[in-house]
Image: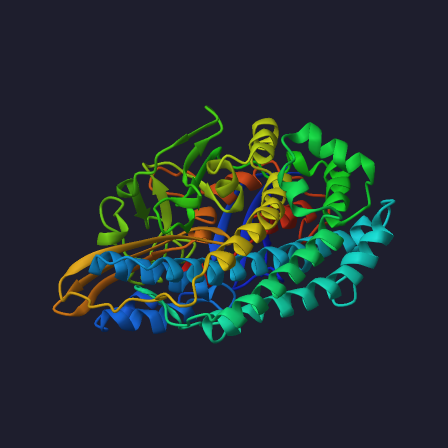
Length: 486
């Protein structure tokens, strides 16, 4: 006999999330993911002066507000046909990277690893060490990471004036110029963060971690000191609990490209990576659609591109079970996040791990940690490349008619803003967030979203109210539900 289990609301998640599971034979046979609240930012923005979007969209989220600002600024820049000066691009990348890396640190130390300190693992030989390191509130590494995160986010006081809801990001660059003395102080803070990562997370230089060429090299490195550093400890859990088999994704990975370069291109190039071919395809943004069949939202006869999208509540709609739409790329389910960025940008270790295991709890978390090792040196380079005597921002004049698209990479993956302006006012504004992709419901064809697929076959022990395997899978995607539902 099958059974149904409602899991949620989840703790240590930004926003509200419930998951409905069908269970048979101690395994999940089907899942439905419910984003339980509606926020209406697309409706709030209609009729506003276009530039005012930069005031509203950071308020979508309190932990990834810069990501919203950057996507909105790019949409406005696309509308106006302007480009940032080199200093402005470096400063914007620094602001975005600071927030993204803070989110990665928060996810690993405060959201993900504390689950292994729970009593359910009391019989494991590593449980006492997990408690010492990762117990909520008082774990040694949790406390250290919280302090490191606090010091790290002080960069944004200099770079952007404040955080969250930083207002220095503009279509024409960054309004907060950085002088020579501030650049030195910022570089010192980045190197302090580097020191924390090299001492506590990796117990190795960042460059050595980023240079690991494949899984064999990773496990050889792990064998040198299985408990040395928190990444090695995580790898010990991967091997012991078989986290490399848990939560397989759809095998298609989307990145818009991360950290735009002033000469064109991206520091971490984007595209679509397919496990079937092991190759990167060019992204066609015109192939992005949103299907609202199973959302408590009005929907058209066919899925709509976000530029023509509708976000209008229908809370009594038959067959709906979430406030989230179902984004698709060319009709296909894709996964996004740090794992996608590392795959599309050609990181050999992550490509090898995903080729062997697919997108799993193990490879998603590994990709985030590898991204920390790769991006901190990029930040050092951007700071050193700043020329304090040159412009950081150029004036912007927005047209009264037109449309714009702003694509960016938040910590959790691909974020897009689409706006239409008529008579000097916003006529339509649509946002597709990373968790919109990963936590999407079924589409009109009944195809489940990425997390809904990943939860199938997850083990459920008898009597579990919140199955531990389900928690690991959900957290491996690092949900931000308030961004999902706007």
